[in-house]
Amino acid sequence: MLHEIVDHVIYDHRAGRSEAGDLISLLLSAKDPVTGGPLDQQEVRDEVMTVFLAGHETTGSGLAWCLYALSKHPHALRRLRAELEQVLGARPPAASDVPNLPYLTMVVDESLRLYPPIWGYTRDAVEDDEVGGYRIPAGSSIFVSPYVTHRHPDFWDNPEAFDPDRFAPHLAATRPRFAYFPFGGGPRQCIGIHMAKLQMQLAIGMIAQHFDLHALPGHAVRYGALVSLRPVNGILLTLHPAKRPRVPPVEVKPPAQMEPAAALDTAAGGCPFSRMHQIQASAHE
Image (cartoon, rainbow, N blue to C red; front, top):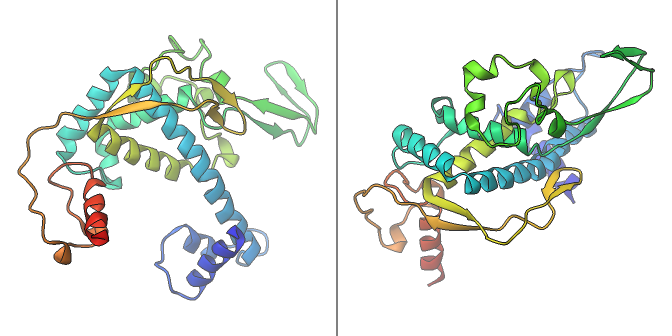
């Protein structure tokens, strides 16, 4: 079923029925470095399936852990909310805002340090090698773990603590290149790194604007070393509306004249999803 859906999307792009400039358009314009020809249908589909399947599960895990970390460190949540209000006011963040939200980026980076969704993976040696005095024969599989390296005391002070300030630019520049690699590194670095981080930044920013987060007392959160780093018994949080500055009331039009949900103006504050529920209720009536 997924193959049929992805194939249909690819065919629409080939037929010019989709906007140019997205991931699939880039794949269709790519050239094989050996033959100089374009990627065939299966090669394009395989790339799209990789991004689709890997992107939603690992990003969801990363979001869950980041929200959990903020629930345990309310001072970080308050500081993040203050930055969001200073830069954005009451409107939700957009991709173009991220460069102006450094603490938001630091919060996401620190969460990915403590809770890297891909906690370990292998690399195969194509020829004999030696690393740190250890002989590695050709054909060996070497297990690499961001989870372990991200907690190594040689690279991180107080490594078990959640401290976004450790990713301030002047500190990050002093660490070895691969002391931090939640998305891998080198030519095999995850192709979805920028998309995943942007998704996390925007989602965390919107949630932090509107909610205080509290971990449910008595519920133990345990790591699950599966394909991704999962909370095996879930993360249970209670959400409470955050206190926000007073804003002028929003004039609500009669249901027949309401704009589509995608065109709603959220600049006046409030959760950007709340008015969608009003529209759905009005349509139902």
